[in-house]
Image: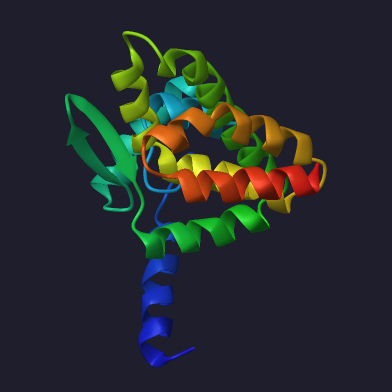
Length: 189
């Protein structure tokens, strides 16, 4: 690696070593998110194996205080995200953790449930709310679909997931992207 990358890596290692054990676990698990997440999503996706749901808010706050997680207010709610450098570092830590793939599966389950909940509500009086919610989570939806495409045994899940999002893609101007996801899911199924 280039000297500046070695310095950045050393700084990340130093920051990571200062974390408590549960903070390290949560940081690694948060790397499954793309583009940001809500507290509810973090609680659903990152818990298990020694990390309880009630701990997540305090741990997120601690990670934000250490500038490893960015907390942003958006329309009265807090959304969290990782800077891409931190995300890549945390993804490496997750890959080295036994059972790390479990959190990608939990991410998939959470966002597939969101898509399936939204599908019938994309017509009717609540459609604007649900279109906005799906647009906010679009990067996470893509990440979950990508995992369906890459992981063994998830081709039917990917097809079901893509099918639940067709109206969102069509209505929100993501028609070509949606078509590609559906086409790929059909080929794999």
